[in-house]
Image (cartoon, rainbow, N blue to C red; front, side, top):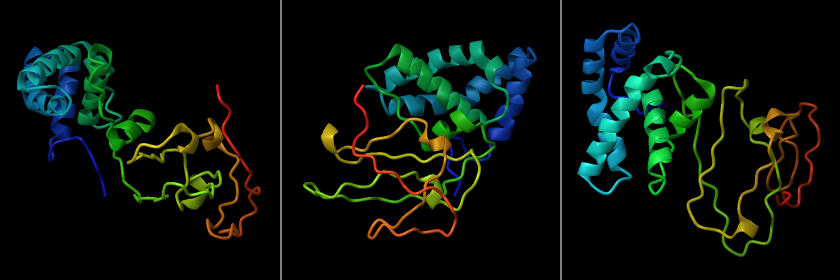
Length: 206
C-alpha cells in the first residue's frame, strides 16, 4: 500500500511546474503556488490555532517555496518535498506547535525514493508492571526485505516512565546482523549463520 502526502494524480504536473519555475518561468510559479496553497494551509491547520494562522503559514511557506525551489531535484515526490519544507519552516519559526512527521515524508527525507511503500504495521502490547524485559534485537533480520532503503519506525501510544521506555543503540542498523529469535523461547528463526544475539541490559546514559 502506498501512502503519500500528495493530492490525487497531480504530482507529475507539480514536478513539471517546478521544473519550469527553476528555469525562470514566473507564470509557472504563480500556477504552482495556486495549486499547492490550499494543501499547505490544510497541513498547517492541523497544528495552529485557527484558519487565519493557517493562511499566514501558507503565505510564508510560498515565500520559502520561491526561495528554495532550486533545491527540488525531482528525486522524491514534489508534495513530499513541500511537506518537508513546510515542516522545517514551522519548526524554526513556531516551535510551540511541533510539526507532525508523516512516515512517508520521513522515509523520503532519508531515502529519496520515487515512491514509499508501507510494508506492514502492527501493535505490540506490554501491560504495566510486566517484569520480563524485551530482549534487545534488530528489526532487519526479522524482515524478508533486503537493501538499505527501508526504515522501521516506532510510535508510543501511551506515556511510560524513562526506566521502562523503548531504547535504541545508535549505529546498530548498519550491522552486523544478529540471529532473529522467537520472543517466547529464544529459538533461532532462521538457518542462516548469523551472530548470536547479544544481551543488552540498559543503554548508557549520556
